[in-house]
Amino acid sequence: MNSINKNIETWYGELRTQRGKTIIIRDDQLPAANKGRIYLYNSERDAIIEYDEAIVTPKLFPLSDEDQARAEAEYDKAWHAVQKKFIKSHKSHSHLPEDNDVTEVTEEEKE
Image (cartoon, rainbow, N blue to C red):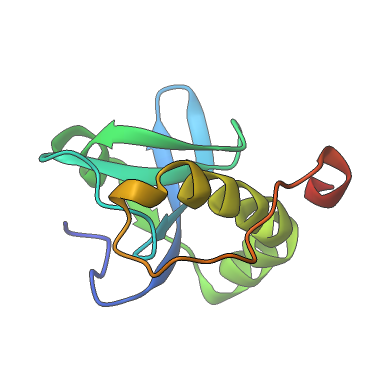
């Protein structure tokens, strides 16, 4: 993992592929993915996607402070809505304590 610091709880970065650049978010609070896999929030797809770690990590790059601030402002609300739904749906596999306050997120809350 050359560009992701595993000691940071939430990491904003850029996934660079032939299709273009996408803001991604890695979060230690998400349940662990299968061996050799990693969960990342993909801002273009507004979803948490399971990636092959060996393939995706060389394509991940940190954001500048300015770009990170912009990404947090633009994607933070949508990210947290998707994160809550994902954790709730994976609760039995999560290392997190039960959260009885997690509720379904409406489309209005995502916007």
